[in-house]
Image (tube, rainbow, N blue to C red; front, side, top):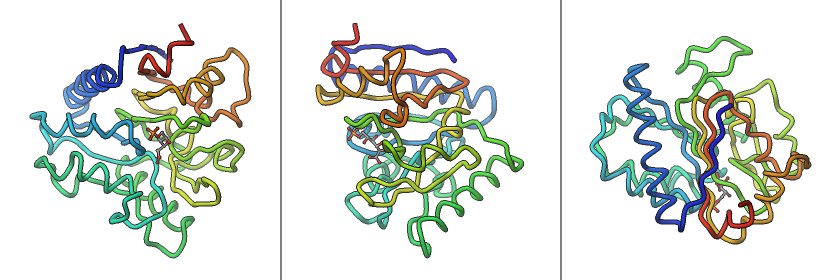
Length: 239
Ligand code: 6PG
């Protein structure tokens, strides 16, 4: 694992830095593998990054969009990560609709939709059973409780090691999420973390020893590159 921690002066600088890295990784993946697979984070922090990317001139037909997690709501719901990314970015660029791979949330159950997305990923990447595909880029946020994607503290989703996709739970609200092993197979994982309210969780995530079931972002130790992009408010006590 190649880990970089950068503390940027403010959220605008954080977004600018994340855009630079993402563009570099998109172009690198296309040059090396002919396409780029990127899994998006939900929440609020990445929205300005998505807006910035919508103004970029990229080979959209070579870029495939996924989500690292999804709230179990319709894609029209204000809580939907898919809705946020489409409105901030994807609706504004000429990306083929077949290149956008949302997580279904309208099946019979969250379990059924998790299995459906697992199958979708396996077919897309052509991975055999027991194998984990490598996304080119996985964007992540971190909650003030140390969760990432929908891997919440003390939930069963943290223990899932033999699946790509599982059902997460936030305050008994179901979510569909990448598992830690899938995230850790990525070529490049980028955390975007801003705000004073993230300080405490970051101190536990960055501690030499701590409880990964309490601070699930500790589980993210990818085989490829790991970037932690923090603003000063979130990261100042880590210096
Ligand atoms: C989600 C995200 C979640 C998010 C963190 C941070 O579906 O909400 O995947 O993991 O990244 O909760 O959210 P903020 O960026 O809004 O602080």
